[in-house]
Image (cartoon, rainbow, N blue to C red; front, side):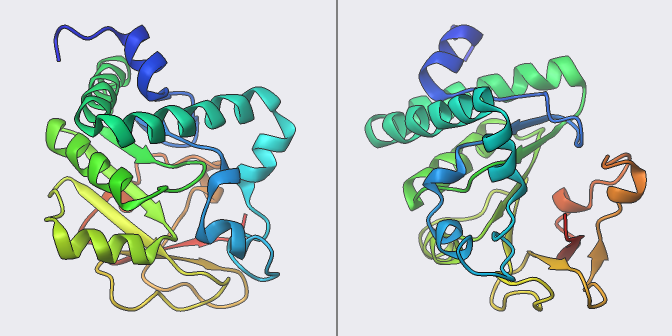
Length: 220
């Protein structure tokens, strides 16, 4: 990957960001307009996607919407034709972000969700190319995750948390790592404390921790 350039990686594969002030390390987002399960849940009151914070950010900041939309199209196009190249471009950016932040953590989809099984496979390859980085991928695409696990081994540095669909639901069954959203009921597992820290992760790395089965987030 030494022959790659950061500008070319962003131009070809989509842009990894270090500008999410809530959490450590780097992130990668795509537009919520292209969510599959999430688009259906967004129409259902009481679902975890009905009042999507990422959708609100895209509406309030057109430049974010443009950037995340570009990320979606660049990622899906390159994965369709040359997934290994996309994975190398992304790994290169994540390692450059680590040099900048000194935080060996990456979050996939602080906006949007994985678009396909092919994308999840390409993300797993990114994880293989960045063994010193801890990766966390929250998703509502439970069927895609199951299809991936039938065909592939999960990289040891990747935690995929399958999200429950409704607020105050129990963790979704059949997955090793999950996440929930609580409002009226007591949380299950480990509760996110970011709100108490001024919407900052602070020293907490629970979402990336494979020893924690479920992380529960208070309703935004």
